[in-house]
Image (cartoon, rainbow, N blue to C red; front, side):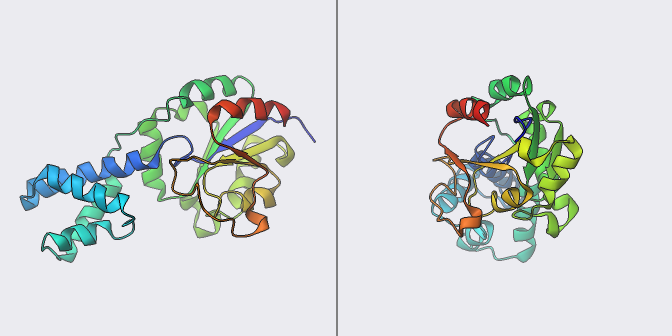
Amino acid sequence: MKKLQAVLFDLDDTLYPESEFVFSGFRSVARWAQETLGYSYEASELRLRELFTNGVRRNTFNVWLKEAGNQDVKNIERAITIYRNHVPEIQPYPEVPLLLKRLQQTYTLGIISDGVWQVQERKLAALGISSFFTTVIFTDKFGSEFWKPSPEPFKMALDQLKVHSSAACYIGDNILKDFKGARIAGLTTIWFRNREGVYSDSALPSKEHRPEYELHSFAALEGLLITL
């Protein structure tokens, strides 16, 4: 096996807390609701946070507006558009910028991430860390056949970096989809089991989804990479 040359990362809940993006979007929607619908900014933001925290994830705006007596489909659609198109107010995990700076001295770095690609691009720009990465693949840009757990985005990254799969690893947080495709493509897989993340307690869907390594902090990552 070749010595490790490339380190690829997921984005959400791996390099930054995804909840920050969610709450940033809620703030934008709450401002719109205050300006357009006459709602209290503070009350709207608080209720949206409460719904999210209580597990209302895919229809948050529907529930919030229904509670306010507003079931206008156009307002629901407008809230979703504002959420998706807002300029995120987010920061990487505190350790990440210095970690990437150190890793960049030894490895080629990349990102492979699902999600609406325009939204993902805005997230990365807001985080201020894009300069560390030689390749960035937002799978949605290439069609559903590139969404994880497909091996295709990993193969694309290897082609772009001109690195053999045995000399690359992938670090992600979502055991439901992050590692199966990476394993098929031949990469070493590392689960950043982020205790704050949505998927930290997810059950393994199958043995094909099992990552080879599991970490709970960035502090252990550099030591592990040296051994690969």
